[in-house]
Length: 229
Image (cartoon, rainbow, N blue to C red; front, side, top):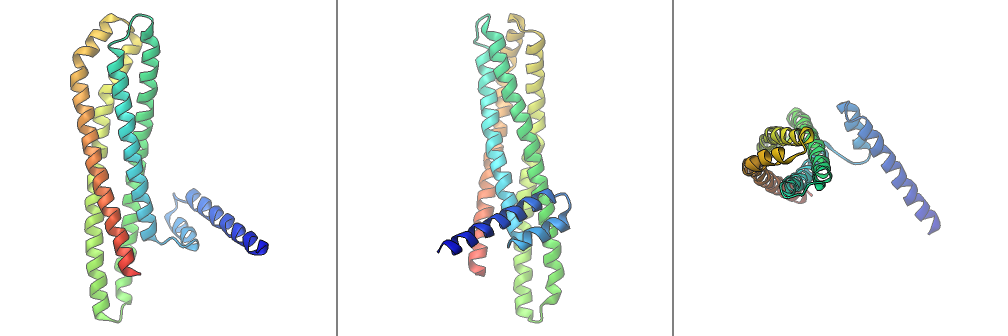
């Protein structure tokens, strides 16, 4: 029993090491795919994994934007000496939102890249079929999966492109507060708060819709795997 436990532990360590190496090779796709294949991950598995990561990144971005907006609303109600402390909290949340925006961008790119590689490989391998019926079925599945994936990537890209136009006005307001920590700056911020809030709220709604579409996509991909097995 002890020997079996030790073997299992060693196997897990090797798998973890290979996955770590694969992550380091992510910039070189062919080496990355080879490394992941050694631990049982095909391109389809990597695609599903990256969609999950992109979804989680958008969930976290939602939370960060909500918090940044809350801090922005708080700052118009502060008194005197509390202004700088409240500004610092707002700036911290904005920086977190900016970091998250970059992460969303990277995750969406990762989904797009692996999907292109998956569909190219899939298309190339259709010629290996000798059974016409199986080939036709695989072609149909390829079309359906490509259509769903392209629709999801387009939706994610659409949301991603809306992030920066929302972030820039937020950054402008925070910079203005930094340079003018006084009642005049608060007055200007108060007048513009409604418009900023609408933009952030609209972005959060768009993100929620994209998250819902990612959930539906992942469910369809999981069901496809179940039917295939």
